[in-house]
Length: 338
Image (cartoon, rainbow, N blue to C red; front, side, top):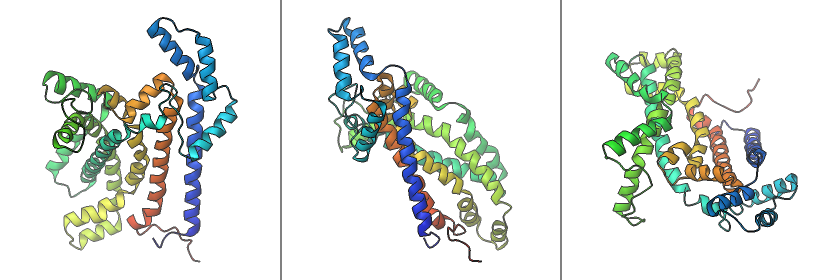
């Protein structure tokens, strides 16, 4: 990493911290701009379910005092930042005395597994398809077939998920419609459970991959078209190097940098989950947990998931900035010597 300088690393680290602070502040303020509050909403739901709640106003006042919702906004803000530094996310406002972390932690592995696999597949397939579409040496028959892979790009992923749910699960009965695993298996490191988890994740995985890979492909195609005219690319072809080496080492490697930046920005989605897809398939991930937190105005659970998104995204971008000189030796962060 000889291309890095101490000043650049410190600057990027400062931006990393600043990004997290601005994001955390936005996460604190945005839910509180909505009308109402979580305690009143919780009591109203109890009233609708039970018909009547004794001493509702006294109960609301007591719970607001318990959670510090009566304090001035700036006091709530500084208390929130102090807790965030200690990774103390507080209690769930809708599921007290359960903590927000206890609500998010069981759902986290589900979304990370699903979205990590989806991101890897869509990134790898999409960029490969796009690079082949933009490479002049791609056979004509393949050039005619590749655009067909982008058929589902214009369909919103949740709408495509509904189509898969209707035809594959309800009409053909090939795959389960909802849930994370079968209730007939025992959770743990055993083959029936693992097989069940994979089976239940196929439909949401396919709905995300097929609708998202087109974005990677179109972006990579435009970048690869530009690389075709670069001197180093033409020289590699003129030297008689193998097509595979020219394609991957001189083409894809130099065109993929913007896609890697987009990949780093998309890492936060591993925590938020694909909310609508998880809701449609009742998949027990953080996206579904975030949806329920929004419905119940559970500030602390929303803040926990969103802050994890911000932390992972900012960390990914920071590390990628430091790795750029290794990916492309032409990039250097040293000042030029005059």
